[in-house]
Length: 308
Image (cartoon, rainbow, N blue to C red):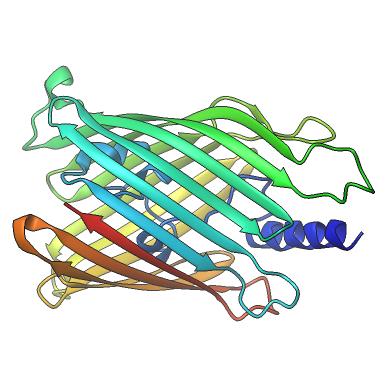
């Protein structure tokens, strides 16, 4: 019975932080993206792209590996929740695009776990559509996903299976204009995925429209390497908004990020170490303050990324 109560508590915590979302709709991925409040659909140009907008893979120029670990809702008594993420992006070439392999997981040890395994592909379509790169670069992508949910019930109390999996996918489009404006669209879980144990429980489709603007130096204010982004997410009859900003200082080595959405405020930092042959090591940190979980004093995220 204690395990059942703990699982229920975990579910309550997650739904409080995600507007009563169901399973596999966590927003806790990608430390850079989290530092910007999760507004990343029209920015996605690194190894975080597969979980925000897979089309962004088409703009990744280097091979990249990223590893993320986190502690969610620190200070919430009796609940230990963590989100982990490993992603790899491999650009093939300009003609054939990029592929990605991603594993993400959110869990509370010994109680409940959600794993997602992703294989993504995207490429820039300018040559096919005969678009002028001096005006816009357009990329499109697809993500194949397998969702696996685990709930550890007491054997003495139920004969339910502990695992349930289902396949689905995402599609995305990202247009990056020469004037710095980016427009993105991502449709997630486009194929119904039933992960219910006792009855049908489908992960519902999510559609996100993103806008971004980038400038090497923001006019008037003179903020260097500045990005501002906005995501509008649609699920059923609900609409949610995420917004964030990012700037790089110290010769583009130090990143500073701010963002938020209705239920949380985010702040993030990143630092890049450059080596020979354009190899880079990037350390990112983000802190999220939940506005609807009063007992918690925040969530912490850290990631290491290696570009080569």
